[in-house]
Amino acid sequence: MVAYKSKVVERIRLPSRDRRERALAEAGYNVFDLDAEDVFVDLLTDSGTGAMSDAQWAALVRGDESYAGSRSFADLESAVRDVMGFERVVPTHQGRGAENVLYGALLEEGDVALNNTHFDTTRAHVANQGADPVDCPVEGAHDLTSDEPFKGNFSLERARSVVDEVGAERVPLVILTITNNSTAGQPVSVENTRQVRAFADEIGATFVIDACRFAENAGFVRRREDEFAGCDIDEIAREQLSHADAIVMSGKKDGLANAGGFVATDHEALFERCKQRAILYEGFPTYGGMSGRDLAAMATGLREAVEAAYVADRLDGVRAFADLLEDAGVPIYTPPGGHAVYLDAGAALPHLSADEFPGQALVCELYREGGVRGVELGSFAFPDTDRPELVRLAVPRRTYHTEHFEHVAETAATVLEKREAVDGLEITSEPENRELRHFTASLEPI
Ligand code: F0G
Image (cartoon, rainbow, N blue to C red; front, side):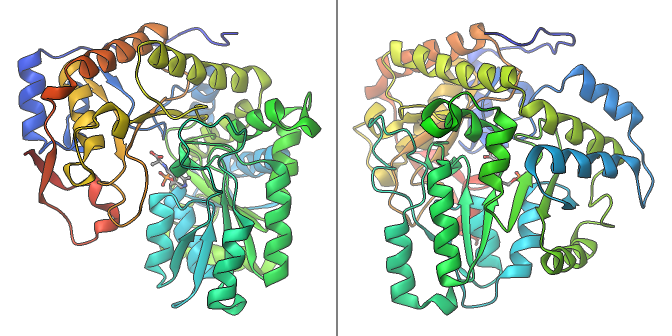
Protein backbone atom coordinates (compact mmCIF):
# COMPACT_ATOMS: atom_id res chain seq x y z
CA MET A 1 0.00 0.00 0.00
CA VAL A 2 1.26 3.48 -0.89
CA ALA A 3 2.75 5.26 2.13
CA TYR A 4 3.52 8.80 0.91
CA LYS A 5 2.13 11.86 -0.83
CA SER A 6 4.17 14.70 -2.37
CA LYS A 7 4.70 18.02 -0.62
CA VAL A 8 7.48 19.45 -2.84
CA VAL A 9 7.82 18.71 -6.55
CA GLU A 10 10.62 19.15 -9.08
CA ARG A 11 9.94 19.92 -12.75
CA ILE A 12 11.47 17.43 -15.19
CA ARG A 13 11.64 17.53 -18.98
CA LEU A 14 12.20 15.06 -21.78
CA PRO A 15 14.71 16.76 -24.14
CA SER A 16 14.06 16.46 -27.88
CA ARG A 17 15.42 13.40 -29.69
CA ASP A 18 17.99 15.62 -31.40
CA ARG A 19 19.18 16.97 -28.07
CA ARG A 20 19.42 13.44 -26.65
CA GLU A 21 21.45 12.24 -29.64
CA ARG A 22 23.83 15.14 -29.26
CA ALA A 23 24.09 14.82 -25.48
CA LEU A 24 24.94 11.13 -25.78
CA ALA A 25 27.70 11.75 -28.33
CA GLU A 26 29.08 14.67 -26.28
CA ALA A 27 29.12 12.40 -23.20
CA GLY A 28 31.30 9.88 -25.06
CA TYR A 29 28.50 7.29 -24.80
CA ASN A 30 29.04 7.26 -21.05
CA VAL A 31 25.88 8.37 -19.25
CA PHE A 32 27.86 9.42 -16.15
CA ASP A 33 28.94 12.36 -18.31
CA LEU A 34 25.42 13.57 -19.15
CA ASP A 35 24.03 16.73 -17.61
CA ALA A 36 21.30 15.62 -15.18
CA GLU A 37 19.01 18.24 -16.75
CA ASP A 38 19.14 16.23 -19.96
CA VAL A 39 17.80 13.12 -18.16
CA PHE A 40 14.05 12.52 -17.87
CA VAL A 41 13.86 9.52 -15.52
CA ASP A 42 17.14 9.10 -13.65
CA LEU A 43 17.73 5.54 -12.47
CA LEU A 44 21.53 5.83 -12.38
CA THR A 45 21.61 5.14 -8.65
CA ASP A 46 19.52 4.89 -5.51
CA SER A 47 22.37 6.56 -3.62
CA GLY A 48 21.60 9.98 -2.19
CA THR A 49 18.94 10.58 -4.83
CA GLY A 50 15.82 9.91 -2.77
CA ALA A 51 13.23 12.35 -1.44
CA MET A 52 13.56 13.24 2.23
CA SER A 53 10.51 13.35 4.48
CA ASP A 54 9.07 16.51 6.04
CA ALA A 55 10.51 15.29 9.36
CA GLN A 56 13.98 15.12 7.77
CA TRP A 57 13.65 18.62 6.34
CA ALA A 58 12.62 19.85 9.76
CA ALA A 59 15.69 18.10 11.24
CA LEU A 60 17.89 19.96 8.72
CA VAL A 61 16.81 23.30 10.13
CA ARG A 62 17.49 22.13 13.69
CA GLY A 63 20.91 20.65 12.81
CA ASP A 64 23.63 21.65 15.27
CA GLU A 65 26.71 22.91 13.40
CA SER A 66 29.07 22.83 16.41
CA TYR A 67 32.50 21.54 15.43
CA ALA A 68 32.72 19.25 18.47
CA GLY A 69 30.04 17.59 20.57
CA SER A 70 27.17 18.54 18.24
CA ARG A 71 23.68 17.57 19.42
CA SER A 72 23.00 16.22 15.93
CA PHE A 73 25.84 13.72 16.40
CA ALA A 74 24.23 12.60 19.67
CA ASP A 75 20.97 12.15 17.75
CA LEU A 76 22.81 10.01 15.20
CA GLU A 77 24.41 7.91 17.93
CA SER A 78 21.07 7.25 19.55
CA ALA A 79 19.44 6.38 16.20
CA VAL A 80 22.25 3.93 15.39
CA ARG A 81 21.93 2.39 18.86
CA ASP A 82 18.13 2.07 18.70
CA VAL A 83 17.80 0.94 15.09
CA MET A 84 21.01 -1.01 14.45
CA GLY A 85 22.17 -1.96 17.95
CA PHE A 86 25.71 -0.48 18.00
CA GLU A 87 27.08 1.79 20.72
CA ARG A 88 29.98 3.48 18.97
CA VAL A 89 29.70 5.49 15.75
CA VAL A 90 32.34 7.12 13.55
CA PRO A 91 30.60 9.43 11.05
CA THR A 92 32.04 9.83 7.54
CA HIS A 93 31.09 11.87 4.50
CA GLN A 94 29.59 8.82 2.75
CA GLY A 95 29.89 5.04 2.55
CA ARG A 96 33.27 4.91 0.85
CA GLY A 97 34.67 7.20 3.52
CA ALA A 98 33.57 4.57 6.05
CA GLU A 99 35.19 1.86 3.90
CA ASN A 100 38.46 3.77 3.84
CA VAL A 101 38.38 4.30 7.62
CA LEU A 102 37.47 0.72 8.53
CA TYR A 103 39.31 -1.31 5.89
CA GLY A 104 42.42 0.79 6.40
CA ALA A 105 42.27 -0.21 10.07
CA LEU A 106 41.79 -3.91 9.32
CA LEU A 107 43.87 -4.75 6.24
CA GLU A 108 47.54 -4.86 5.33
CA GLU A 109 49.47 -5.50 2.14
CA GLY A 110 49.14 -9.11 1.01
CA ASP A 111 45.92 -9.83 2.96
CA VAL A 112 42.82 -11.36 1.43
CA ALA A 113 39.30 -10.03 2.10
CA LEU A 114 36.32 -12.28 1.47
CA ASN A 115 32.90 -10.86 0.60
CA ASN A 116 29.68 -12.36 -0.80
CA THR A 117 30.32 -9.86 -3.61
CA HIS A 118 32.46 -6.75 -3.35
CA PHE A 119 30.70 -3.62 -4.49
CA ASP A 120 33.04 -1.61 -6.74
CA THR A 121 34.10 0.97 -4.11
CA THR A 122 34.62 -1.87 -1.60
CA ARG A 123 36.79 -3.76 -4.07
CA ALA A 124 38.77 -0.59 -4.76
CA HIS A 125 39.28 0.19 -1.05
CA VAL A 126 40.43 -3.36 -0.28
CA ALA A 127 42.83 -3.17 -3.24
CA ASN A 128 43.96 0.28 -2.09
CA GLN A 129 45.27 -1.32 1.12
CA GLY A 130 47.32 -3.73 -1.00
CA ALA A 131 44.91 -6.57 -0.18
CA ASP A 132 43.14 -8.95 -2.50
CA PRO A 133 39.32 -8.78 -2.69
CA VAL A 134 37.84 -12.26 -3.33
CA ASP A 135 34.12 -12.78 -4.03
CA CYS A 136 32.26 -15.75 -2.54
CA PRO A 137 28.80 -15.66 -4.13
CA VAL A 138 26.60 -18.74 -3.79
CA GLU A 139 26.17 -21.05 -6.73
CA GLY A 140 23.13 -19.78 -8.59
CA ALA A 141 23.82 -16.11 -7.78
CA HIS A 142 24.23 -15.51 -11.50
CA ASP A 143 21.22 -17.64 -12.44
CA LEU A 144 19.03 -14.84 -13.73
CA THR A 145 15.72 -16.65 -13.43
CA SER A 146 15.78 -19.12 -10.51
CA ASP A 147 13.39 -18.16 -7.71
CA GLU A 148 15.74 -18.93 -4.82
CA PRO A 149 14.87 -16.55 -1.95
CA PHE A 150 18.42 -15.57 -0.92
CA LYS A 151 20.61 -15.42 -4.01
CA GLY A 152 22.72 -12.76 -2.25
CA ASN A 153 24.09 -15.22 0.32
CA PHE A 154 27.77 -15.82 1.07
CA SER A 155 29.18 -19.19 -0.04
CA LEU A 156 30.97 -20.83 2.88
CA GLU A 157 32.17 -23.56 0.56
CA ARG A 158 33.92 -21.09 -1.70
CA ALA A 159 35.31 -19.17 1.29
CA ARG A 160 36.73 -22.38 2.81
CA SER A 161 38.42 -23.27 -0.45
CA VAL A 162 40.07 -19.81 -0.57
CA VAL A 163 41.25 -20.23 3.04
CA ASP A 164 42.60 -23.71 2.25
CA GLU A 165 44.53 -22.21 -0.64
CA VAL A 166 46.01 -19.08 0.97
CA GLY A 167 45.98 -19.95 4.70
CA ALA A 168 43.74 -18.46 7.40
CA GLU A 169 46.46 -16.06 8.58
CA ARG A 170 46.17 -14.17 5.29
CA VAL A 171 42.39 -13.66 5.70
CA PRO A 172 41.80 -11.14 8.50
CA LEU A 173 38.51 -9.82 7.11
CA VAL A 174 35.18 -11.32 6.06
CA ILE A 175 32.53 -8.92 4.70
CA LEU A 176 28.85 -9.56 4.10
CA THR A 177 27.09 -7.05 1.85
CA ILE A 178 23.35 -6.79 2.58
CA THR A 179 21.60 -6.59 0.21
CA ASN A 180 24.15 -7.80 -2.30
CA ASN A 181 24.33 -4.84 -4.69
CA SER A 182 26.66 -6.48 -7.21
CA THR A 183 24.46 -9.57 -7.31
CA ALA A 184 21.34 -7.77 -8.49
CA GLY A 185 20.45 -6.42 -5.04
CA GLN A 186 19.61 -9.92 -3.77
CA PRO A 187 19.05 -10.39 -0.04
CA VAL A 188 21.10 -12.35 2.48
CA SER A 189 19.35 -14.55 5.07
CA VAL A 190 19.92 -14.25 8.80
CA GLU A 191 20.74 -17.96 8.81
CA ASN A 192 23.57 -17.32 6.33
CA THR A 193 24.72 -14.36 8.44
CA ARG A 194 25.00 -16.63 11.49
CA GLN A 195 27.02 -19.13 9.47
CA VAL A 196 29.38 -16.43 8.22
CA ARG A 197 29.89 -15.26 11.83
CA ALA A 198 30.82 -18.83 12.85
CA PHE A 199 33.16 -19.10 9.86
CA ALA A 200 34.89 -15.80 10.73
CA ASP A 201 35.39 -17.10 14.29
CA GLU A 202 36.80 -20.36 12.90
CA ILE A 203 39.51 -18.50 10.97
CA GLY A 204 40.01 -15.71 13.51
CA ALA A 205 38.82 -12.97 11.13
CA THR A 206 36.93 -9.74 11.82
CA PHE A 207 33.38 -9.91 10.49
CA VAL A 208 32.02 -6.72 8.89
CA ILE A 209 28.55 -6.17 7.47
CA ASP A 210 28.16 -3.61 4.69
CA ALA A 211 24.77 -2.42 5.89
CA CYS A 212 23.95 0.13 3.15
CA ARG A 213 20.60 -1.55 2.41
CA PHE A 214 20.02 -3.26 5.76
CA ALA A 215 16.35 -2.25 6.00
CA GLU A 216 15.48 -3.60 2.56
CA ASN A 217 17.32 -6.78 3.47
CA ALA A 218 15.32 -7.06 6.71
CA GLY A 219 12.13 -6.60 4.66
CA PHE A 220 13.06 -9.60 2.51
CA VAL A 221 13.97 -11.65 5.58
CA ARG A 222 10.55 -10.89 7.08
CA ARG A 223 8.86 -12.11 3.90
CA ARG A 224 11.07 -15.10 3.10
CA GLU A 225 12.68 -16.53 6.25
CA ASP A 226 10.11 -18.43 8.34
CA GLU A 227 11.75 -17.67 11.68
CA PHE A 228 11.11 -13.94 11.16
CA ALA A 229 7.57 -13.88 9.73
CA GLY A 230 5.65 -11.20 11.58
CA CYS A 231 8.70 -9.69 13.31
CA ASP A 232 9.32 -5.94 13.25
CA ILE A 233 11.84 -4.72 10.66
CA ASP A 234 14.10 -3.11 13.28
CA GLU A 235 14.08 -6.31 15.37
CA ILE A 236 15.22 -8.30 12.32
CA ALA A 237 17.83 -5.68 11.42
CA ARG A 238 19.31 -5.71 14.94
CA GLU A 239 19.38 -9.51 14.99
CA GLN A 240 21.19 -9.65 11.64
CA LEU A 241 23.64 -6.83 12.40
CA SER A 242 24.36 -8.12 15.93
CA HIS A 243 26.52 -10.87 14.44
CA ALA A 244 29.00 -8.37 12.97
CA ASP A 245 32.04 -6.91 14.75
CA ALA A 246 31.48 -3.67 12.84
CA ILE A 247 29.32 -2.24 10.08
CA VAL A 248 30.02 0.17 7.25
CA MET A 249 27.07 2.31 6.23
CA SER A 250 26.19 4.70 3.46
CA GLY A 251 23.46 6.98 4.78
CA LYS A 252 22.64 7.72 1.12
CA LYS A 253 20.83 4.40 0.88
CA ASP A 254 18.85 3.17 3.90
CA GLY A 255 19.74 6.30 5.86
CA LEU A 256 17.25 7.98 3.47
CA ALA A 257 19.59 10.96 3.29
CA ASN A 258 21.34 12.81 0.45
CA ALA A 259 24.77 12.60 2.10
CA GLY A 260 26.56 10.77 4.87
CA GLY A 261 27.83 7.48 6.18
CA PHE A 262 29.45 5.89 9.21
CA VAL A 263 31.26 2.98 10.79
CA ALA A 264 29.65 1.49 13.89
CA THR A 265 31.03 -1.10 16.29
CA ASP A 266 30.96 -2.22 19.91
CA HIS A 267 34.69 -3.01 19.97
CA GLU A 268 36.56 -0.33 21.86
CA ALA A 269 39.97 -0.94 20.27
CA LEU A 270 38.62 -1.03 16.72
CA PHE A 271 36.55 2.09 17.43
CA GLU A 272 39.69 3.94 18.57
CA ARG A 273 41.61 2.91 15.45
CA CYS A 274 38.77 4.02 13.21
CA LYS A 275 38.44 7.33 15.06
CA GLN A 276 42.11 8.14 14.49
CA ARG A 277 41.84 7.36 10.78
CA ALA A 278 38.62 9.36 10.58
CA ILE A 279 40.35 12.45 12.00
CA LEU A 280 42.93 12.12 9.24
CA TYR A 281 40.55 11.52 6.34
CA GLU A 282 37.06 12.71 7.33
CA GLY A 283 37.02 15.25 10.14
CA PHE A 284 36.64 15.49 13.89
CA PRO A 285 34.82 12.33 15.10
CA THR A 286 31.59 14.11 16.01
CA TYR A 287 30.99 15.29 12.44
CA GLY A 288 33.17 13.22 10.12
CA GLY A 289 32.95 15.35 7.01
CA MET A 290 29.21 15.99 7.40
CA SER A 291 27.43 19.18 8.32
CA GLY A 292 25.36 19.03 11.51
CA ARG A 293 22.18 19.28 9.46
CA ASP A 294 23.17 16.24 7.39
CA LEU A 295 23.86 14.26 10.58
CA ALA A 296 20.39 15.23 11.79
CA ALA A 297 18.67 14.26 8.54
CA MET A 298 20.43 10.89 8.52
CA ALA A 299 19.52 10.21 12.16
CA THR A 300 15.86 10.83 11.34
CA GLY A 301 16.08 8.83 8.10
CA LEU A 302 17.49 5.76 9.85
CA ARG A 303 14.43 5.57 12.07
CA GLU A 304 12.06 6.02 9.10
CA ALA A 305 13.87 3.32 7.11
CA VAL A 306 12.72 0.57 9.49
CA GLU A 307 9.05 1.58 9.57
CA ALA A 308 7.00 -1.34 8.27
CA ALA A 309 5.01 0.91 5.89
CA TYR A 310 8.19 2.38 4.37
CA VAL A 311 9.80 -1.00 3.73
CA ALA A 312 6.61 -2.51 2.28
CA ASP A 313 6.15 0.51 -0.01
CA ARG A 314 9.79 0.22 -1.11
CA LEU A 315 9.88 -3.50 -1.86
CA ASP A 316 6.42 -3.50 -3.47
CA GLY A 317 7.34 -0.45 -5.59
CA VAL A 318 10.45 -2.10 -7.02
CA ARG A 319 8.48 -5.34 -7.58
CA ALA A 320 5.75 -3.42 -9.46
CA PHE A 321 8.40 -1.80 -11.69
CA ALA A 322 9.87 -5.24 -12.42
CA ASP A 323 6.39 -6.53 -13.31
CA LEU A 324 5.87 -3.65 -15.76
CA LEU A 325 9.17 -4.51 -17.49
CA GLU A 326 8.37 -8.22 -17.63
CA ASP A 327 4.89 -7.53 -19.00
CA ALA A 328 6.57 -5.43 -21.73
CA GLY A 329 8.70 -8.45 -22.68
CA VAL A 330 11.97 -7.08 -21.26
CA PRO A 331 14.32 -9.80 -19.88
CA ILE A 332 15.21 -9.08 -16.25
CA TYR A 333 16.96 -10.70 -13.30
CA THR A 334 14.27 -12.32 -11.13
CA PRO A 335 13.20 -12.11 -8.44
CA PRO A 336 14.03 -8.39 -8.40
CA GLY A 337 16.21 -7.01 -5.60
CA GLY A 338 15.35 -4.33 -3.09
CA HIS A 339 16.75 -1.19 -4.70
CA ALA A 340 16.81 -1.82 -8.43
CA VAL A 341 15.68 -3.91 -11.35
CA TYR A 342 18.51 -5.45 -13.37
CA LEU A 343 17.99 -5.96 -17.10
CA ASP A 344 19.55 -8.95 -18.84
CA ALA A 345 21.37 -7.11 -21.64
CA GLY A 346 22.89 -10.36 -22.94
CA ALA A 347 19.39 -11.67 -23.68
CA ALA A 348 18.10 -8.27 -24.83
CA LEU A 349 20.89 -7.74 -27.40
CA PRO A 350 22.06 -11.28 -28.23
CA HIS A 351 23.82 -10.17 -31.44
CA LEU A 352 26.46 -8.26 -29.42
CA SER A 353 29.45 -10.08 -27.92
CA ALA A 354 30.92 -9.18 -24.51
CA ASP A 355 33.67 -7.05 -26.11
CA GLU A 356 31.01 -4.98 -27.84
CA PHE A 357 29.53 -4.13 -24.43
CA PRO A 358 25.86 -5.09 -24.85
CA GLY A 359 25.01 -3.62 -21.43
CA GLN A 360 26.50 -0.24 -22.25
CA ALA A 361 24.80 -0.31 -25.67
CA LEU A 362 21.47 -0.92 -23.92
CA VAL A 363 22.13 1.92 -21.44
CA CYS A 364 22.77 4.28 -24.37
CA GLU A 365 19.64 3.17 -26.23
CA LEU A 366 17.42 3.66 -23.15
CA TYR A 367 18.69 7.21 -22.96
CA ARG A 368 18.41 7.85 -26.70
CA GLU A 369 14.89 6.45 -26.87
CA GLY A 370 13.33 7.81 -23.69
CA GLY A 371 15.76 9.97 -21.73
CA VAL A 372 16.12 7.16 -19.18
CA ARG A 373 19.46 6.81 -17.39
CA GLY A 374 20.59 3.44 -16.00
CA VAL A 375 24.04 1.97 -15.39
CA GLU A 376 25.95 -0.89 -16.96
CA LEU A 377 27.17 -3.62 -14.61
CA GLY A 378 28.71 -6.13 -17.00
CA SER A 379 31.86 -6.37 -19.11
CA PHE A 380 32.36 -2.61 -19.15
CA ALA A 381 32.17 -2.05 -15.36
CA PHE A 382 33.85 -5.34 -14.42
CA PRO A 383 36.54 -5.83 -17.07
CA ASP A 384 38.30 -8.86 -15.62
CA THR A 385 35.50 -10.86 -14.08
CA ASP A 386 33.09 -13.31 -15.56
CA ARG A 387 29.64 -11.84 -14.93
CA PRO A 388 26.32 -11.64 -16.73
CA GLU A 389 25.75 -8.56 -18.88
CA LEU A 390 23.45 -6.61 -16.59
CA VAL A 391 22.04 -3.09 -16.69
CA ARG A 392 20.86 -1.72 -13.37
CA LEU A 393 17.82 0.52 -13.19
CA ALA A 394 18.11 1.75 -9.60
CA VAL A 395 15.05 3.20 -7.94
CA PRO A 396 15.58 6.38 -5.89
CA ARG A 397 13.61 6.17 -2.63
CA ARG A 398 10.17 7.86 -2.44
CA THR A 399 10.83 9.74 -5.69
CA TYR A 400 9.21 8.29 -8.83
CA HIS A 401 5.62 7.18 -9.44
CA THR A 402 3.87 4.58 -11.57
CA GLU A 403 3.81 6.87 -14.64
CA HIS A 404 7.61 7.18 -14.57
CA PHE A 405 8.01 3.42 -14.39
CA GLU A 406 5.49 2.92 -17.20
CA HIS A 407 7.53 5.31 -19.33
CA VAL A 408 10.70 3.30 -18.62
CA ALA A 409 9.00 -0.01 -19.47
CA GLU A 410 7.61 1.42 -22.72
CA THR A 411 11.04 2.84 -23.59
CA ALA A 412 12.73 -0.52 -23.00
CA ALA A 413 10.10 -2.33 -25.08
CA THR A 414 10.64 0.12 -27.98
CA VAL A 415 14.42 -0.42 -27.80
CA LEU A 416 13.89 -4.18 -27.99
CA GLU A 417 11.62 -3.83 -31.03
CA LYS A 418 14.53 -2.18 -32.86
CA ARG A 419 17.24 -4.36 -31.32
CA GLU A 420 18.86 -5.47 -34.62
CA ALA A 421 19.78 -1.85 -35.35
CA VAL A 422 21.62 -1.42 -32.04
CA ASP A 423 25.40 -1.21 -32.56
CA GLY A 424 28.05 -2.36 -30.10
CA LEU A 425 30.52 0.09 -28.57
CA GLU A 426 34.28 0.30 -28.25
CA ILE A 427 36.34 2.18 -25.69
CA THR A 428 38.22 5.21 -27.00
CA SER A 429 39.82 6.28 -23.71
CA GLU A 430 39.94 4.85 -20.20
CA PRO A 431 41.62 5.76 -16.91
CA GLU A 432 44.66 3.91 -15.59
CA ASN A 433 42.60 2.30 -12.81
CA ARG A 434 40.43 -0.12 -14.80
CA GLU A 435 38.54 -1.12 -11.61
CA LEU A 436 36.59 2.15 -11.76
CA ARG A 437 36.72 2.78 -15.50
CA HIS A 438 32.97 2.83 -16.09
CA PHE A 439 32.71 6.21 -14.33
CA THR A 440 34.97 8.08 -16.73
CA ALA A 441 35.88 6.05 -19.85
CA SER A 442 34.67 7.25 -23.27
CA LEU A 443 33.27 5.03 -26.00
CA GLU A 444 31.97 5.21 -29.54
CA PRO A 445 29.71 3.05 -31.66
CA ILE A 446 31.51 0.36 -33.67
N1 F0G B 1 28.75 -0.43 -0.34
C1 F0G B 1 27.71 -0.71 -1.16
C2 F0G B 1 27.09 -2.07 -1.12
C3 F0G B 1 27.24 0.27 -2.03
O1 F0G B 1 26.22 -0.02 -2.82
C4 F0G B 1 27.85 1.54 -2.04
C5 F0G B 1 27.41 2.58 -2.96
C6 F0G B 1 28.91 1.79 -1.16
C7 F0G B 1 29.33 0.78 -0.32
C8 F0G B 1 29.60 3.13 -1.11
O2 F0G B 1 28.76 4.10 -0.57
O3 F0G B 1 28.33 5.75 -2.41
O4 F0G B 1 27.98 6.36 -0.02
O5 F0G B 1 30.26 6.06 -0.92
N2 F0G B 1 26.67 2.38 -3.94
C9 F0G B 1 26.14 3.35 -4.86
C10 F0G B 1 25.44 2.64 -5.98
C11 F0G B 1 27.12 4.35 -5.35
O6 F0G B 1 25.07 3.31 -6.97
O7 F0G B 1 25.19 1.45 -5.89
P1 F0G B 1 28.84 5.65 -1.02
